[in-house]
Each structure stands twice: as structure tokens, then as C-alpha cells.
Image 1 (cartoon, rainbow, N blue to C red):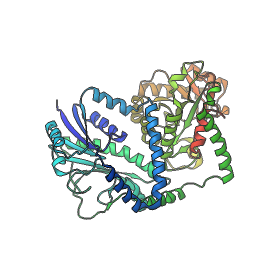
Image 2: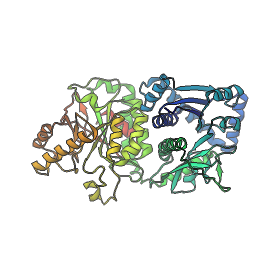
Image 3: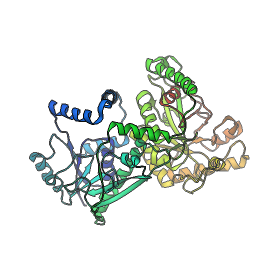
Image 4: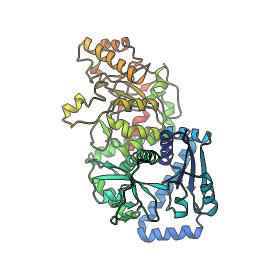
Length: 529
């Protein structure tokens, strides 16, 4: 049995760092970890000098920026103290700690002699630099094989920081991740692995950075595995390239304005003001606790796609979805459909009860939505048309709209999502209109989709969401066929909130798309409309 020792150099144990450790540990079992976190101490004089340098570089913009940033940090700290939910990655990381295969060292100076002694005594095989400060030779050469760095940027063209910013500034059509060997200079070592993300039509900076987080985890996992397998190649960078530094606030503002111009035009001002007034009223009611005076209710949110390729009534953006799930986590109580399906009476809660669902089976559900849901510790259900997933097929509504072919999930991806704990349900085989099709066709579609899900995923109790989801798209007789096929519940899509009790064969859902502002989204979550 091969036992490996990995040392991680980092500036914090942020979610991407924890996720990367978890995924590498899954790829390489029997691994021991030493995590060295740099937490430098700065004197009041050093802090003041740093702020003065920032003020000279950014001017008056620094003052409101600091006020907003301070307020956001206070909110995050308050939310973390009052949020008991943790992500799937945290659960696994804590399990690794409990097994005593992870040792965490926090150091004010990671290059101090006593720290070097700790790393040397650990006898690491490989060092991983993930969000670490610049490492010096006495430290990064301690691992037997050396140290590799995860850099969220293409090298040699985009050394430095921050991820994706300068690529967008220069109007590049893709952003990248690089794993390279660490040497004395910044991001100049031999390349050992690279991946890229194509820029979509409506990409945002934060959306691309979220995608790079996932790409980086996968790239580092594959690279470490290749290094230990002895098949990793070293590619010298050459003499060309450019190193970027942190942008000024003026540059950040300018890029944000440029990217906003690429988004679809907003509705008329009066319409936006009226909608915002209604949404803000709902949000005030939520914060004041007035929602608790209403009958208990569950709001089931319906999504289809999470992507920046398009903006339509079936799509939300990547950054937008991340914000929405953060709002659900902060202001609502996320629940799984499994939590509510077996109850006839909805229990009262201090926060609005919200369940998240997806229809159809687009691949972006796996690539973009699932990681964000897991990061925020939010359960979800995905209803897939089993004859279209893993076939390269197309949904009827995409053909009618003239959409180009859109990638769909594979059974392997669905199996992985099922292992992650997500509910996978039926959306028929070919996304049929159950009310318009004949009885035998509907019966066959129900039975076949049920059997495929049970065979591929080993699912026993299945839920069903009928395609199109309007009142006119299912009849009492077709709903009886759903019961006869053994489905334990049925979800619609024509709006509404489940108040007082759950009708398991008519669970109401509210559709969400890109035009929802954050306040309008929260208003939907309250179930007041």
C-alpha cells in the first residue's frame, strides 16, 4: 500500500482550498496532509502605511470601498456565526481531520526556522501552493518532488493576479488555469498542466471566477495524480509573458461598466421601480418577522439552466445563481423535497421554507449549479428526461425556439450527483405534453423513465415533474397514471406557493429566470404572491 505525504501552502482555508484537498484525497487514498497557513502579523504602522499606499493608488474611491467592504465583512462574520449548515466539502474535510490524516499549522512567518523544521520532519513527497504567498527556495524545495502552484490564469501571458480580470480587460475569449512548478520568480516555473474556460456571451467576472474554482480543483487533482504516476510532463514557459498586479478601483469600475453594457437591456425605469418597491416591501416583511404571522408555507423554486451563454426565461447567470443561493442560505430555511413530501401539514418556521428544483437535464446543472448548491449546503432535486440525457438529443422547446444544440447531462454525471445526495426524478423520457399525448404513450413514457432511473441510479422512491408544467398540460386521468406508475409525488410549474399543507401530487413551484433582481428573488422566496 502506497502512502503519500502532501504539504499544502496557503493563505487561508477557503472553500476552494478545502474542496481541492478533499478531491485530491479521493483520487489518492492513503494520503497524509500537512496544511501550512500563512497568517502574517502586521503592526499598526504597517497597516497605516499599506492603507496610505492604497489611497495614493486609488484616490477617493478607496473611502466608500472600505466602508462597503467593512460592512460586508461584518455581515459575513455574523452570518457564519448564525449559520449551522456546512457544505459537503466541509463534512468530508472534517472527517479527514477526525481521522488524524490532516495536520493544520498556522504561522505568522511561514519561512521561520521552526516552521521549516516542522515541514522537514513531516517528510512531504509533494508541495501544493494554493492561494499561498510567494514561497522562498528553502521552503518550496523541502518536498521530495518539489512544489507545484495552482495559478488561475494562463501563463506566461497572464502571470500575477487577480483571476480572469486582466483577460476580460484585454477582451480575451477564454480564461485559464495553470499548474506549474514553483521557482524563485512569480509564476515562471515549468508548466505541468493547463485548462481553459471559454468566455460566454454574458460572462461576468465573478461568474468566470466561480468556474475557474471548479476547473482549478479538477486540474490540480489530475496533475497531482499524473505526477505520482510518473507521466506528468514539464513544459518550459520561455522568455516571453507578462506579470499583472492588482487593478486599481478605477479599473475595476471601468471593467464592471463594460461588462454591464454586454448584458441585455433592463426593463423601463418605471417598471423596475414598481417591481422593486413591491419586492422591498416583501423583504422588509421578511426581516421584520411579519412572514411568521402568515399560514406556514413552502416555496419550491424551479430552475432550468445556470449559464452565461444566453439570457432567456429558462436561464439564470452563474454569478446570479451563486448570489441567490447565498440569499436562500442567509434569509431562508432550505429544505429537501424529501423533507416535505411525507408530511401533510407544513411546520411553522422562523424563516421561509424554500426547496430548489431543476427541470430537463442540461449539463450546466452538473457543471455550474451543483457545485454552487454544494458550496452553500443547499439540497436540490433534478428532474430529467431520460431519453434525452446522455443521448445528445434536444428538448422540443429548444427546437421550437430555434436554439442551437445545448449539452445535456450524462448518466455518469447523474450518478455522481446522486452520490452527492441530490434527488433525481423523472421528467418523462422525451419531454412530452402528458395532456396532449395518448394514454398508452403517457403510460409508456412514465414506465420507461421510472425503469431507467431505477436501473441507472438505483433509486427506489421516485418523484415526477410533468413537462411544461401548466394546468393544461396534465389531466386528472393522466395524474392517475402517475400514481399507478408508482411515483410518490408530482410537481407542477404554473406558479403558486404550498400553503398550510402539501398536496404531494400537485406540488406548486415558482419559476426563476435572469430578470429577477435579488430583492425580487427574495420576494418569491417568501411566498407572498
